[in-house]
Length: 317
Image (cartoon, rainbow, N blue to C red; front, top):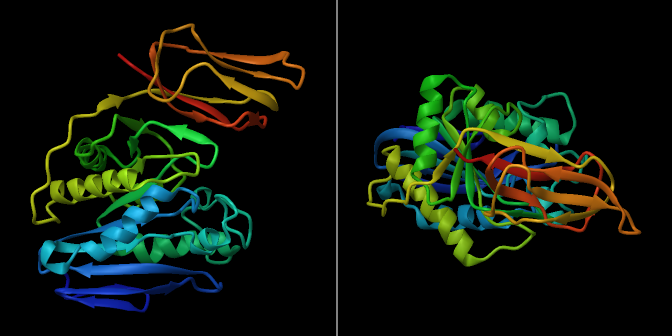
């Protein structure tokens, strides 16, 4: 609980919940925001979704949680941004910001003098990360990406932030948690600004279901309970498998992608993960497992472009 929880021109006093809209300075962009200022003392968590606006389960989860959570449930505060790339969600044109055709998750920490996407990233960094103590960023596979439920947690913020982020991840009902050295992206930027953070991935291929949304909601509540922000009890999660190392394969050619395995499949070192063929079905390039591991996510479309992501493959010890 803070006397006043303030984001932009939105204010929530102690014991108050406020729904409103945040205006990104120097642009026409807005974001729906909910502030929940709890009835007890505690830290503040930032819940973001829709950085990629075609990743739907997390968006639905954040919307529903913004209505279901009440100040009396909370010690501290919660800031919920269910549609971070709001104009992209409304435009329904894929994962980029329609005003400048940029991937928001590659723009952090942003630029106050840049294009719309740069300014949006800057606004999140300056006005949201600066007043919060933790961050959960909800994602899923994109329109052509299949994925096993998993969480990335950053190792780039120092040992203390890494361990808190790891405990946040371990409290969730996902198959795998993956150590990450990425420094781009919303949650990675939050880590570099001192916020223990996780990126939760569930769903993909442009679909969503209430079952996936409920699973995301359950995981968010579990993290809130682990951090001492949520008062009510949450059923403990089964412990996920921790992945310390992963290999991210990218396409060496443009063509047709034929995967041999799907997310969750375990693969032995040397086995063929998949191959790219041309329009005459001739093999252009092949991709093999470099160690014993598991397919975490992969491109699910037949069409593939050179230098695009193919497979994320986690090492199993």
